[in-house]
Length: 317
Length: 197
Image (tube, rainbow over all chains, first blue to last red):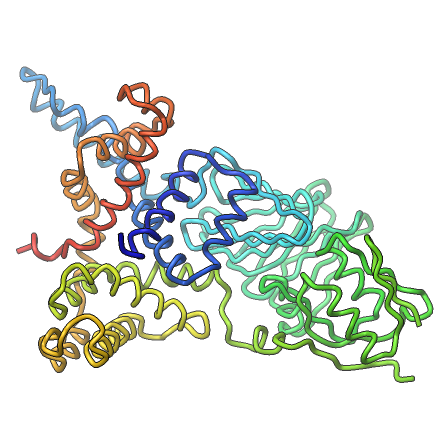
């Protein structure tokens, strides 16, 4: 058997498992790992999945044409006309709303463990990426999502008639053609950063004007009980902040305390910073999966003392 | 003691410097721009490579190279890019004498022309999609076809399909996997222009 054929066989089994719901976090991780292993794996998978997705259109054949095997002769003309009309309606409807999703609608809660990361690709090319320790519910219509906790990046194909809506921490964010992140990791505060396009954020419980805003590129809205605060930063700064999409964190003039807190979102083994060195400023780019490397660099570059324990890495002068 | 320091761990710089695409971006691009070219690509490979059994491997190799390159930067003219890669791959295979002697790739000059030809086929694919799918279904092995129809047209679960067909759920899974592979092969290997006047 050729290599191509073996790869294809495995790819087909992933697609079948997704299709029939033989799927969970473990499968998700295994599948992702398999895809990472070789570009040949990935292209074989994409090819089969894309082809399989095309067959969704077959739903247009439901009822009208498949019953043609038993025509009612006496009323053939009438029913014939009727069938054509029905088929046209079905196809038109399918063009707009037919389950156009990569992921089956039967399960719409997606989550990542600490240190995990997941990309959901929707049929229209929109995608949603979940950062570490995140729970997201995706609406059946795939035009709405609820961020239960954590952080997600949304790259949404705009559809004026059917805008994408994200609900998070009592706020509604409506896309007006966008790339944005929503972060709900600190109790009581919600952060929405917009890189591209436009989005509206509003508090779902109050109509007060200081609780809603339209965001433009570079804007970050921080929502808390007292209202919305919008700050503008260079877009590049916001783009750095979503380096987690590549498994990285980027620190620019960040205090060691904040940098450690950021790292701790990704790993079970937590960095603990002595308050005496918490104010030191950090610049750099680091892989989120490896706090040890970060700690080692602190020792080499700043002469700090690093003690590694089972659950913690303690950083002192 | 300094209060600030610039540090970077190795490997970090290349991974975050500018142009590198996210996997989701490359995947979406690959689906949108590259996969629809499959019928043309297959035609091209079949016409220019004598040993037909090599063609699926060659196709996947082209895809892998295109995908790999796109991770750094999305090619601006995907079609030209795909065919340039395919052409280079064939030429290299011939030169290395890996699989076949030099006359195997019929006329290397001609490869260029094929790549430059416009592709109205794609519009035809979109218009004819449903008919195209039906034709492909008709060519599947009966059991695989039945599983796909019950799933896609009737929307049945695996258990329901198994019951309806009187087979085990495991067998349903096997038929589906074979069906997907065969269907994609037929859809990709079947130049849609042939049926059009």
